[in-house]
Amino acid sequence: MLLEADFLTPDGWLRGQLAVEDGRIASLRGEPLAAARVGEGGRAIALPGFIDTHVHGGGGRDTMEGGDAIQAIARRHARHGTTALLATTMTAPRADIEAALEALAPACRERGTQAARVLGVHLEGPFINPARLGAQPAHAVPATLAELRRLDAIAPIKVLTLAPEVGGHLALIGPLRDLGIRVQIGHSAGSYEDGVAALNAGAAGFTHLFNAMSGLHHREPGMVGAALAHAQAAELIPDLLHVHPGAIRTALRCIPGLFCVTDSTAAAGMPDGDYRLGEHSVRKCMGGVRLADGTLAGSALTMDQALRNLVSLGLELAEASWRTSTATADYLGLADRGRLVAGAWADLAVFDAGLTLRQVFVEGEEIDVVVDA
Image (cartoon, rainbow, N blue to C red):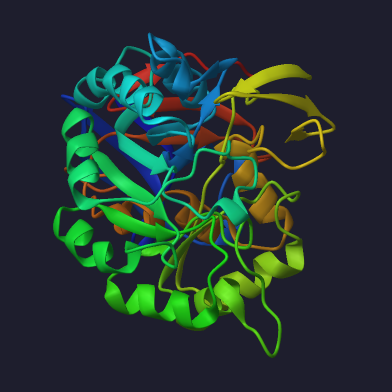
């Protein structure tokens, strides 16, 4: 396969040709291009495919359903430019979590056709603070290393959300890091000091920064203060509902490796209506997803819209792309994703000058993208 476009590479924009062999980029050649000229003359704009570490659902399906739900979810998000993702669980009874992981495991081993690559699992709960459930069901429990080893053996846990102030959680962070699990601080009522202690113990980042954690006050900086003062990485949901644009700008200035996620639910890519989020019933309306009491419950965001939202806030397209792909790949330690270079997987999201998604390639496979007229 040979693709002509304006390509965003680690060294800047390049106008040229990209060749694909066996699912990987065989070569990328062309001439350097000024950012102001990108997309001129109707040229396609090719970015690294999006990587989303926080996906609960999409296309009307939820990760906790089991069965073939994850394949439907991965297909739906691929149609919006996401080329790799982490299937994200909900707080639930242990038996339900185990059943969900058993259903997710095959997708972590083999990518389905027309689908994003499922890199592994983000275990969001049940090891959180019951005082900061957000939209998580009320099944929070303390963690043990033995239980986490057992769950990781069912399906590979790449990211774990943990409230460090609960029980013996702080002492688990180092051993979990040694297992290759990135511990994220989230759904936490902990203090600034708890956050700093968790980072010093080896926590890698924060789950959906600002949401479901103790906020910033000038005399009690909270978890948000610990993140802004000390974190190298954190998730953020840029749907412009979960986080005010001013807070997004603050986080961008403070956290070098801030990366964007959708926290998407079954409502992503679907019309307004009622959907499932774990054991909860949620409703999509006016662009958001909420519980009956009005609490935000994940999102209906897709990563192509996340990119457009970041650009609408004033980010250059190159930085918006970096925050939705490369920064995430770096966080996960993936040198062959999230960048357009020879040898990397041929994961691309191709846009027109108006940032409408036109083509998607996952490991060299072209995905059927529905383009609005």
